[in-house]
Structure formats: C-alpha cells, structure tokens
Length: 303
Image 1 (cartoon, one colour):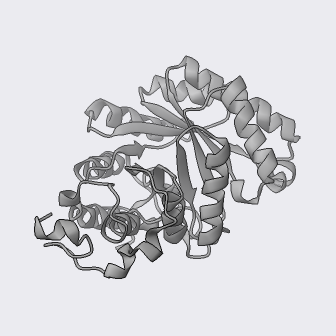
Image 2 (cartoon, helix red, strand yellow):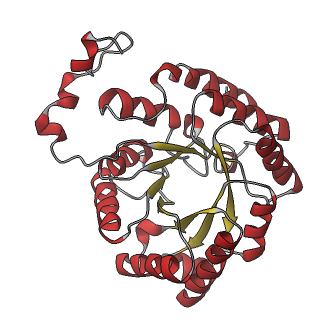
C-alpha cells in the first residue's frame, strides 16, 4: 500500500471501492478481530457438491495452490470416507506446505484416532445439535449427542490435536441447549475453538451477527464460522459474523459445496480486505486467488 493510500483505504494503487464503507456511521458498531484466519474446506466440503470428484493428485495440487495464496489452514478431508481420502491427507501433511493441516471427523473416537494417525495439526469434530436433526434425522436422545461429543473431543486432546467443535444445524437449535452443550464439552471434554454452523443456510445477515455476539458472550474460545448458501447469503452472513467478532472463516474456492455451496473464499477475502480494512491474507497474494479458482473449476469439471 502506498503512503498516499494509508489514509484512504478505499483507494490504493490496486483497488478503488466506495469510501462510504469506512465512515464512522457505518463502522461504529463493528467489533472485528485484529486478524481473520482462513480455514479452507474446498477439499472436504467442496467435494460434497454433486458431480465433484477429486483424485489424490487433484487434492494435493489444490492444497499447494491454496498454500501459495497464503491460506492459513486447509481442511484436507475425512480419513474415514475412503482409503484415497486418507492417502491424500497423508501426502499433503508430508509435503509440509506451510498452512496448518486439518481434517474432519464425526464424534466417534475411532475417527479421531484416524485423524491423529494421519499426522494433521487439528481436527474438526462434528455432531448434530438441533432437536430436528438429533431426534428425527439421527433418532438419538439429546444426551447421546452430548456424551459422544465429550468422549470424542477428550480423545482429540489426548492425541494432541487442536480441536474445533462443530455443531451441525446449530442455527435451528435451541440457543440455551446449544450453549449448555458447548459448556459441557469445554469442561468435561475438550475444545480449542467452537464453530458457528449454518448447515442449511437459514440465517439472515442480521441473525448471523446476533449468533456470533450471543456465543461470544458465553464462550471464551475462538469462534469460527461455517455458513452455507442455500438462500444465497453465505458470504454476507460470514462477513457479518466476522464484524461481530468471529476469528476464523470456513470457505471454499468458488463457493462449491453441499447443495447450494459454502461461503466463497474468493468473495469473502476481497470484501474483508478492500471494504472492511481487515487483515486476512497477504494483500500481495490476492491475485493468486484467480489461479486457485481456475484450477479448482477445471478439476471439479465446473469450467
């Protein structure tokens, strides 16, 4: 950024956006973190889009390109899905690309042990939390979800994994139940970070801000956001949650993912840097996002 542009973040040598983004009347209620971490899920959630199938080599190359773009964390897959997925995770770990390597796990102790055996830095552990998902889709008593969460996260701690607790359909859960579950997992199990999950994209931007604020009032751990785009609001909801204090963004290249997809990495990052002035990726690497996007579109047969 040039000396001239330091006082005018809306206009630099590389971009020119509206100065209205920076006026006090707009920004006075924002409470963003000092830095936003990108947790890319293209290799895992992105492959859940209909018709998207990666080979092991595809996954490794996408991870390399994400690393070149400066992404801080890469969620490489789910070892329990297939031997190929596990092999890709192991290969990416072995490459030592720079970003922290994570994988995804159900709230099952054996899944967590598989993740640790792959050599990853951290694990995202999922559990359903809405009464609808737990009672009707999974046909579990709510206490079973709590018990599984505690056991799996405690195992992750024993394995030395950075543990991200991920609550499926959290935005349709009872808020008190959700927060009480988080309290119990944090005290009886283990949790290094908690993810706000809008599995079916049912939040509005205002509700995303509310969700982040309410959780931060109760949870002292870092807050991550994983928002889907069934109503086309994944990017907007992600930005609003960050402006309310969420520190880590889950996103995919091009917004690919299950059903209508996830928050688009290539939209979220420019919005945060150019319009909100937040530290995210290295600004000099923004052009690398185009290269990543073109490659993912090619291997995912979306070009």
